[in-house]
Length: 160
Image (cartoon, rainbow, N blue to C red; front, side, top):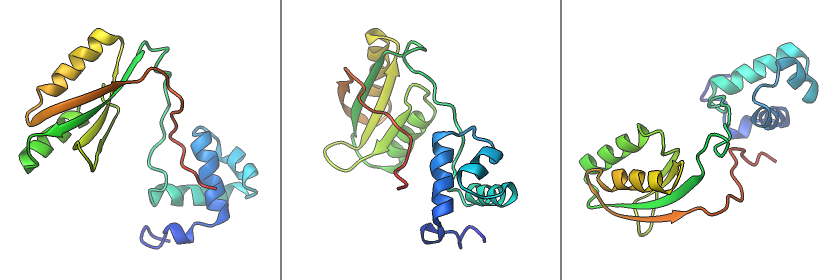
């Protein structure tokens, strides 16, 4: 099956089960996965490879403990650009893409143009980072909200 042939409609229960296990345990071995989904190892490996090749599995990552690493500040900033000329949007999106203290950014509909997550060690560093964001070419307004308690963060998709 090539990439075009593997669509959401062609994922069977075994594929979905594999994806559920892989997203929970990214380091699971093929041997363990094959046991969990009731397949022998070779067909399991083939399906796994097909899911990767078809980009259902985008990447494998380790989720680090932000607080243990000293990043105690998290804020969400609404960013408004002065205009939507491609020069401004491209410049802003390139800045965000190359900035490691911005782990998440979405272009949004509504009163602002983007929502950006900003992480920092403390309030002073957070202020410095927001100041850098304010000076990005084309940015006309920021509205920040600081997280006081994280309730849920997940990268897992609901595959049930």
